[in-house]
Image (cartoon, rainbow, N blue to C red; front, top):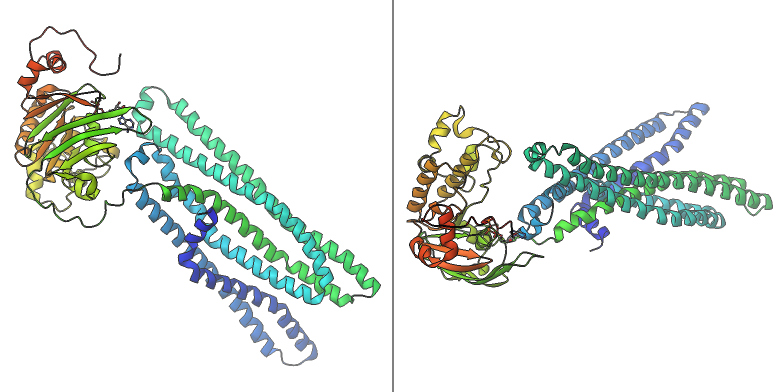
Length: 585
Ligand SMILES: Nc1ncnc2c1ncn2[C@@H]1O[C@H](COP(=O)(O)OP(=O)(O)OP(=O)(O)O)[C@@H](O)[C@H]1O
């Protein structure tokens, strides 16, 4: 779709009211045109001593009607503009939240936010005021042109000649406005991205004394937006200059040619005067046309950035009623020859095959970057395998709606995100109707009950942006409590206890063990002490399962596992300190 058709598509649902608005503009214009004639009659009546009441009433009615029509037209137009921007923003919010994870991975959130907040406002005016002004300008200009033709065809030719020259110049200027707005909006997106980057890691920025560097980065985008804005403003100003010049040039040409025609007797003086009045009358529709075209170009400059979001792939199977899972029994989870690579990267998983039996605990261990978190991401259909299948209870999850897959799974992320809001809102995020008894139970098992009891507002305490007012361990326990409250079929814990003190870690280890009687648990852990009692441990290396078994089996059979265990003093051993961060070498 061309940008113009996209713009029309925003206006289309409101075409009725926009057409009505156009009619009102024309009527208000018409009433304005008639008023001088009626005023003339009033003056004539007063001069001749006859009654002017009728004309006065008509004049008053015209003035009032004109004002009312203008008021109603302005209200309809602005209301429609607000509706257009509301629809665009609704659609953008809806899509952005549903964008596929790979798409979100490669776009700065600040830029996406700017499309909702800033770009949409330009489209709002273009799809309403711009279109009405252009239509009004075109219709009124055409009307004036027809009447000019009735008065004198030759002079009409002269006028049109001048207008064509101006139209060609406009054709050069208008696309510049559009390009400038597109550049300015890109920069506004870049400002959003830069600020978002800083605010998302404000402590890192401060701790590294990077305030000035980050300010400079954001300011570069601010400067680019300013330059592009100025560039566009120059051309917008040029449009009004051209419109003024068009009228002046038409007036002078008509005066010159018309004067000669009158002198030669092929035209009467009143004809010339009438024609000149029409030339002046043209000023208003031409101004409306020029301003409407500028507004349209500005909207077209922004429409691409909005339309780009409409073309990004979304997860279209996360809405609608999913219904309760067919069974509450813990399911079997299988990876069967699963291969996967992130866009532009080498393989992250290279043919992973394993089965997790219902109601058991499987631990994934291995060096950093081995592909553990990637498996969790595939299990929730954040990404799709490039080969192989992930199955839940024997069903390939690629054949299930994402909502259904995710409903069965509770996921505690590596950095256990907590969202701004209250503790309660975070806890009940997936289960808004959870029973008080269940809430109390999960708070107890995650040992958050004492913490909550100490807070003045208890569960209604605000946790700040990303839970910044909580400690790392409290955030993790909150995330685990949220997961347990869902009573999931599958529980995924990614380094979920990494930030807990030893006492809490042990307590939560027991909770997870208990949970595995009700659900299938997969947990990723670097601290092997948390996984020694798992039913099955998978050792991952470079996207492959290199060994599997219980802790005791693996200590005996797998050198890498033995090394990991020895460095964590879980087995006696004489081990060279090895890089287990995967950073070096
Ligand atoms: N969103 C992403 N885009 C591109 N590459 C990614 C992405 N996420 C992870 N990777 C890469 O994929 C590989 C596997 O990453 P993954 O997060 O699965 O490792 P991991 O075993 O969980 O590591 P860790 O123990 O450090 O969390 C790594 O090389 C990583 O750099």
